[in-house]
Image (cartoon, rainbow, N blue to C red; front, side):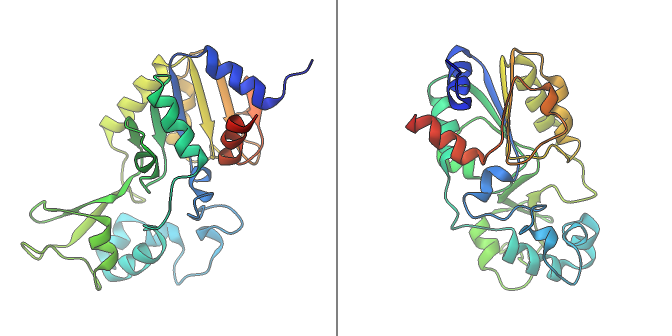
Length: 243
């Protein structure tokens, strides 16, 4: 009898003791957060400047008000709720099987679903800090501010703790993610085309037994995987509960 993809994945998860998950924008699209590079994503919409420019460090410094007009309207999605992917991964962690989630997303939905060990490669909209005095502010404060968000204590400009273009990834986050991958026996990659570096290069650190790729479209790493599932990751994990 031929096993279905869902049955194969169930078998892999059952035999695994240290699972690490690495996810991209596709993990959050099923929660209503737009993908950057899909047909309906931000990169295919029309603005005065392309998102790569508006989400750059230099644009933040030189055009702060315009940066925040775009950022507050398009990047902060406070009404979004975790989908089956976020919930399923949190359950795996609670069961002691999943040791870490590594994400390119900045929405905080993994934590909202209950995941505790999350390496946020590109930061989070939920962390914001005054550049002058270091005071911290919530995403709600940024979203509800008028114009450029300024510190209530010193009047300094507040900056989101997200990695903008022209900025480097946080070294401690990268090191933590690499250590988790190196220690994993199963590495699940989902909702990403594996086209963005250096994040996509994390796959090279995996030396474990099972590499699983779950994505709607093909990636350039499919040939390396032990199991490839071509469907939305939330749908895939929902089927895990139903079959």
